[in-house]
Image (cartoon, helix red, strand yellow):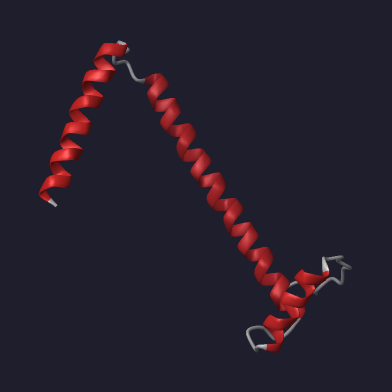
Amino acid sequence: MPPAETISVTLPPETVRTLRERVEAGEYASLGEVLEDAVQAWQSRRREDAERLDAIRARIRRSLDDPSPDLSLEEVEAQMEVLFAQARDDRRRA
């Protein structure tokens, strides 16, 4: 692991108070550890967001590349009505 680097960060007083409370409660050994955990959570969320976006883009690409003919509004409405009816039946059975 490379050596740690010291930086200066300005945070709102309420945020600093919350961070110090977590350290005082024993959840973390230091403010640096709290901030490291926060950065890791932020990085994880960004990775998950990127993965979701990639999945959405892939679904859009598959849809655009689908050779099936486009449906008319009437066909879509008919299919939706079938799905709604199935959902109502499932709810009644539950």
